[in-house]
Length: 207
Length: 292
Image 1 (cartoon, rainbow over the protein chains, first blue to last red):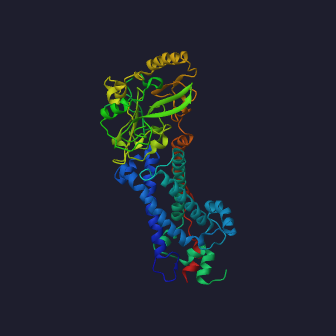
Image 2: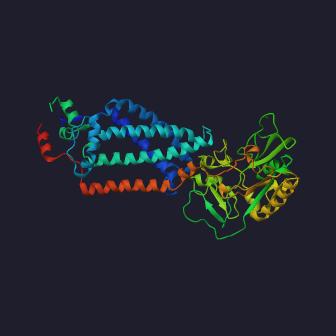
Image 3: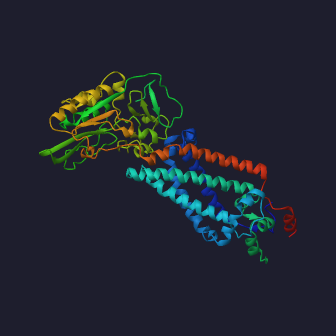
């Protein structure tokens, strides 16, 4: 499956490694965050060695994901700049979800992927800033600030989990997408169907 | 203090009832600011009974000592000087946990059983369940809980729940030499306060009154104030304390709704997949490109 010499390289090993490190951090943060989010999910603390260890570890993993995401942000920022055609693509999303398309031709990333990229970036920024305020082991914020930070942290965390649910489902729903992030390559057919402008660019084809 | 309790009316991060078959009258500590002489016997008794010792600190040039509540100083006297009433007034307030009927700390706490409220109204921290997140500090309308740097746990006044549970009065009450501190049922304390207030009014303090703020459902530590209309005079005592709307929003109905939304999102994805199938490359395109 991965051995076809005609396959197109979509992500480099560095890009994939960076993505999966961020993903692992996110899973750890989401599970530990949810444990404190609602009493029904408190048993998740056992995955982290109990509530105290969870409280100790969560902020450090948070710092790690921030650093790793900055690296990913630098790699993918220019590829994710929104253009008019991206908003056009987003208008067709209901049709895509309903009947599978057809969708306007897209570059390496489609409007949905780009929007997700920025939304995740904003969530992570809010989570980082509010999380630092809430880090009582090292910071002693005024009460009003701590309250705003706590609300912001919970809200942006919940939104981010929602976004990642969409992100993961999109990868499951679109066969071949996960492979691109695992091995780096996609078939030409996949590239032409999902990202035709990128396919043209990679293969020198004229539309 | 963890005891086998059958009288727990509220328990942090717990959505089912706690052992609560035992009923008991609500208790209260009454602090009569007008008869307090600032001797700090209550502070010493608190340290002694609870067997906690603060580090020797530095003086800030005023009588407040230690200058603030800490993980080992669960009550401190706060001294405020003001001109008024025909001369210098020294308003001395014993600060510490107010034991709110609706405790913001307990609402904010994410660790099951780290904070409980007994049927007698005492709000107690069970440090063995505390994870040290400090959310209680964020939730408290009075800025009372303190995170210990030694063990990462939060501490505050227990209203001597261990003593009260066996029929004794709190240590600070026992030590007070002027009777400024009283302890009993909340009803008794209201009656006692009413006498004190009418006495103060007779002596010219027209605005004397009881501090039992309704915003937090009333408190189990109440003050008799000479200027009940201006609680802020007493070293910034909150005029209308309540659980901050930010905390209510953070810890309120939004959380189950957010959880339900996440669950619905996952369910929606599953239903979408089984009804619409995968977003695969159409066959014709696949065959065409497969030949390359």
